[in-house]
Amino acid sequence: MMAHVEKAQRATALITGASGGIGAAIARRLGSEGYDLALVARGEERLKSTATSLRDAGISGGLILPCDVADPEAVHRMIEEVMGHFGRIDVLVNSAGTSRAGFFLRTRLDEWNEILRINLTGVMLTTQAVLRPMRRQRSGTIVTIASLGGRQGRETLSTYCASKFGVVGLMDTVRREVERLGIRVTTILPGEVDTAMHQDGPERGERRMRPEDVAEAVSFSLRLGPRAVLRELVLHNPDSE
Image 1 (cartoon, rainbow, N blue to C red):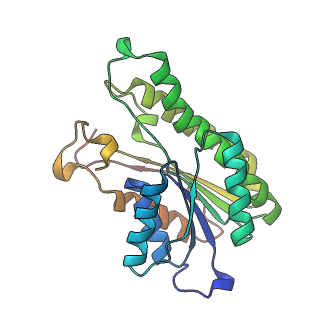
Image 2: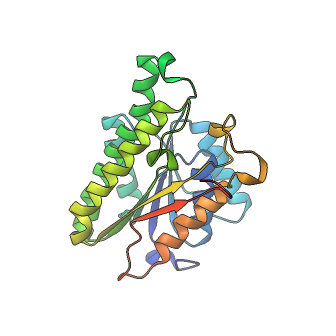
């Protein structure tokens, strides 16, 4: 476990979607365990709010990096800045994502393109960029937050589910390609989580898991010893199918 180690020994965790919801909860959890944090999201003000809440909890606010993860040049600059500041990237958590509910027949192409751009292309670009230093290190862990919507379709979420099916397939392929290099790849598939993105979802009240539940799953995957790889972890809502 990484908790409270000296700075020279601290590992660095890069977290996308860190401006709120699941990403911010993961930042709090990993920061409390002693990781140096690189916090990535499109909105700088919300990132600053996350950093402030971390400092208020006695955790380092981390390196704030406004970045559109679906912009290849922006991702390249962001990775260079992380490497220049920390010298290495030990953990990538792909948590950036978006959704929009609506029946498939009413889906507009611009909505389709935007959701796939962030949810799938963003994961591809960030993972590809991080793998370069991880390959040089011959070590690293990539944790991607997918969704149960990447295993089964959900009414009014056709585009979101399509993007998450893509994420699951992408990361399974990446795992097969890099595991022999000493790089671990884990995909976490939560059910409905109590975040702003899912306010209109079917689960209500206590049936919704909390962002902290997903953060606990990320922490668990990172605490496993070198002889164990958690390839996929599915988190169901209570009494769900």
